[in-house]
Length: 207
Image 1: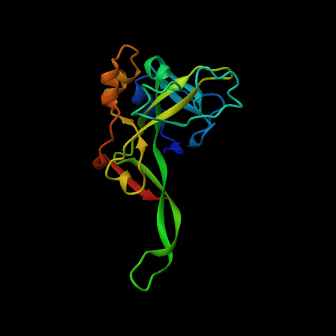
Image 2: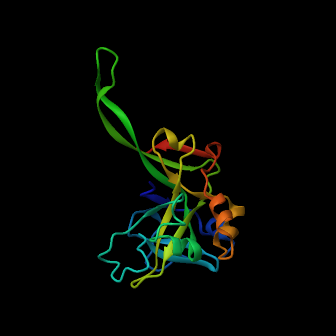
Image 3: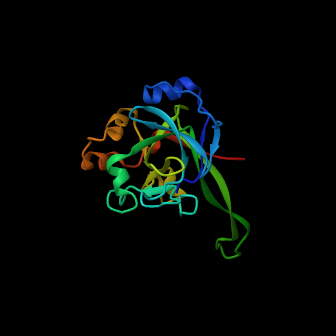
């Protein structure tokens, strides 16, 4: 599950990502993005900001509602909470890197060659080998108090699969138009939601 990511790229690189002018939004600071934070989001008409934490369209009070920071790509088109947004209100979520936790052994291994007696979680970051920002597939809902989005996830690639069973759905630049176009057929949309090539990504421990 993607539960924390980072945006810090120069404005011109974010502009290039969507081929639309990007300006620093009021109330938004570049850096780590956590659930319920305000974050930049790309739409077919350009950039805007939303809170990270999707609420179903029938929820009257999003403050008290359960929020969804992720939606599974395999079921997003069918689940009542997400299917309307998947059909009509898709977005891209720019990032420079995202984080996941890796379990690492600590303590003394067994005398008989068994595993360590305890584990701790090590924060890992994942980014593009190019160092450039990338676009995660998202959906959003228009709700009272402001629009809110979720990041779609899929099976992990070989790099992520060693530490987690999910990863964000990352889109190639030439896929962004189809993802944002409300006329794109469901089948074509679903074909975009596949693991991003591990060869184009790198992971690192976060000290």
